[in-house]
Image 1 (tube, rainbow, N blue to C red):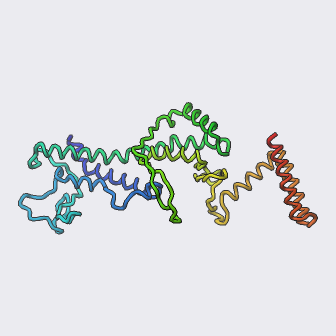
Image 2 (image 1 turned 90 degrees about the vertical axis):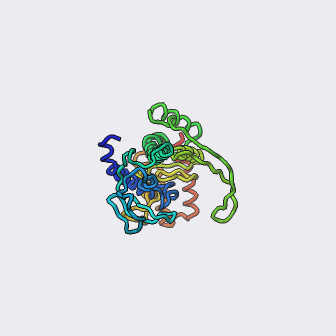
Image 3 (image 1 turned 90 degrees about the horizontal axis):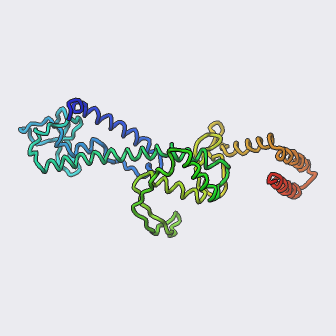
Amino acid sequence: MDYELHSEYNSNVYKAISIFENIHDKLKKLPPDNKIIKPNYMKLDDLLNEYDIFFKDGLDDSDEDITWETSTKYGTGEINDNEHSVLRLHTFCPDDLEHIKNYNTKMSDVLHDFHKALNDFFNQYILLLESYKTIFEVFKTFIDNFLHRKETFLTDGELANSFDKFNNIHGMNFESIQCRMNSLRYKSLKDASGKSILCEEIHFDDLQSFLYFDFFNGIRHNYIPNKCKHCGKYFLIQGGKYFSYCNRPLEDDPRKTCRDVGSRRRYGDKCKNDPIWQTYNRAYKAHYARYMKKKITVAEFEEWSRFASEIRDKTIAG
């Protein structure tokens, strides 16, 4: 190892630890990782301590057994999970290979294992960040600019056309994603009421593959992520009725939601800009006034309302 890399090794270790901790702090708030990550997940310094033989420890051959009171410039004594006394390194300075005792073929294999473990450790974070990068560059762009152009659920044909158009226009598209699944099976699970239900169990090689499968499987069943036209945050349309506004409470009035405000706003925009809705709204107000003055009954007002809505929708349809 070059001297510059050697001298900066410990500094780079702690820079990496800081980055990984920052990533984990954000993952704790994001599904599905918030349910997957365990509190005792392996950290970079845990991995390096598993291969502490390749780092300086500051101990002399004449040193007595390690205890809780053992302390050097590179680490302190502690009891590990196997109930053995060890020196837990907190400063990582790679030892010169010629200084490592019994350096032989076996030690070369251990060193190879160490490099592979480091490579796998970093790659899991690289793959994770690439998955989230894809969400912003591919999924988000498709959702914002193609999936909701009609502001309604798309038919299979419309979805296919939007899919093809997106892939043709954008360099970063769904064609660049490889969905890697390593197993698929069916198993019986219990639902919240204790009833048995048959489920698919799929194991994915990475988060991006899971998101790819889950995204399009959801769209085909009208479970579609959408961006609220009021607050700008994303929400999930869960089948049934299409919505352009979420159900989050308003910050200035928690009794109301974005959907409450949005529905009134959209109705107002229609009545302001569309002559059909203008006519309908004037008639509605007139008949509602007659109902309030008790010139017509509730049943008569409801009958007229259904009649007027039908004429309105037929007129809009041409």
